[in-house]
Length: 170
Image (cartoon, rainbow, N blue to C red; front, side, top):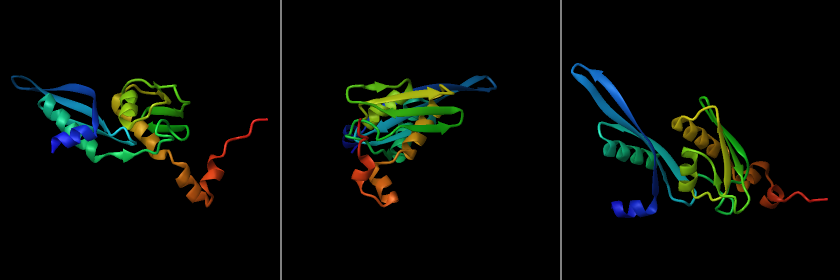
């Protein structure tokens, strides 16, 4: 059962945080993990897990990420359809569609998120925070706000060609 799941999804460990609880007689350590799970075809999820040992925290985070997966519509299976801004807490991320061959220009946990998602060309900038939790949640917020031309066309009662036509150069 697990062999099929591992081949279907690729997993990225973003961070492990060691936390200490001071008790009589010393400290008790626990671990918090953030995992990103994606299928490289437009589905991605982020999850967190806490436990007394690292492998258990990673397992919990992976299960959480699989349960929170969302679908992101990609243009030509390589980039976003349009530029989008996402916010969460003090974090703000700007995601921009990029030309073929640009690559993933993003820092920190956003790079792992784009790799798991299957995005090949994107430019991303994070402002306000470098906290991985807030960066990832702001990026997820941006993904939820992005729309495909098909959904925009249906909202406006137009066909897709009217939405996606290129501006003519003079």
